Structures are given as structure tokens and as C-alpha cells.
Length: 264
Image (tube, rainbow, N blue to C red):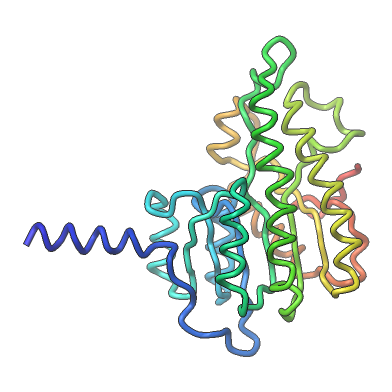
């Protein structure tokens, strides 16, 4: 009996991230794809859209260890979990191909790295960390957007968003020291998404940059930050409200979760 139980558990883990939705979406039933869904803001995005009745493609690097995400999936049958590392471009292409006939109304480029502050401060700069952060924070969202552009174009809502930060703002740099790599990678993301916005306009796709604010996540805690912060659910509620209002006429400014414009 114990051997049978272990077999069932192993089969369950093997199927996580390996299955598509059972049937195409019904009319009026939108789909969202979210990167970095196993914890923090990404997990809160999954919960938000699952509770709203959306089809949710939740991606993370290791679905088998994403206990909270799998619990959400168990409670919401419209959630599918897929294994994805946004630095693995071949895997991104393979995932896009597996969903080639599935319209995706909203692509949320959430996966990101903040990095430890000491390694991004003069005297301790770790340039290997910089390369990793650029791969995750800047290249990853651009590759995801390229790979899934056809899926988004085939949908009703046609939206691509990427999470940026007030720390990427040149005019706001004086407010906090350090975090060079994070700032630079998010500034690169901003420029990439603005260029993509221009290229996608003819296809009816809206590309937007949103900022979550300072959010109480492990990623923020590990950086050494101990200031005031929002819960992931609070942050996502604000961002989702803004995403819902996006139209082709959106001016393309960076909007914080509280609705305030973040200067470049």
C-alpha cells in the first residue's frame, strides 16, 4: 500500500506542468499567462485571476516544489502550471508552440530578480550577478513577449504587461543608494517594452509597464530592505485594476500600483 501511495505521489508530481487545458476557452472566458508564479506577487496574480474565473497559465522554474501554487491549482481547475525559466529561450519557444492554438488575453511578465544589496554597492560589485539580472529582468520579458505575440494578437483583450520599478527612474535615483544592477536591468526593460509597444501597435496589442510598489516578499526581504511595504495581494489588486483599464489609447506611461505616474 505504501509503494502504491508513493507511486501516486510521483505521478502527480510528474504531471505538474505537463498538461494543457482540456478544451479551448469559451466565449468571454479570458486567459492570462503569468511568469514567476510560485510565490509573492506572481502567486498573488494567479490567485486574483483564478478567483475572477480566468484561465490561468502559471509558470515557475520548479512546479514540483511550488506547494502554494499547487494548492491554488487544486482549488481552481482553470489553473494550469507549466515549468519555465525565463532565461531558457528554447523552453520559452517550446511552451509557446504547445499553446500555439490558444489565445492569451494577458501576458504578465512578472518573473524578476532584485538581488542582494551588498553585491550592487560600490566596493562589492558582483558583475556575474549583473549578467544574471539582465537575463531575468530585461531579456526574459522581451523574449516572452516575442514568443507569445501571436497568442496575444489572437485574443480579445490583447495585452502585454511587464513589472518595472520606481528604482528604474532616472529622476528618482537620488532617493535610494545602491541597487545598481536592479536599476539598470529595469531601465533596460522599460526601453525594451517601449520599443515593443511601437512594434505591436499595428497588431492591436497594448504593451504597458506597471510597478508593484514596495511589496513584502522574500525577494525584498533577502535584499536587506526593512521599510514599509504592501502585501502581494494589495499590490496586485492595484495593478490588476490598472490593467483592466488599458486600451489602445493608453499613453504608455509607467504606472504604480496606487495609480500614480512614475517619471522616467
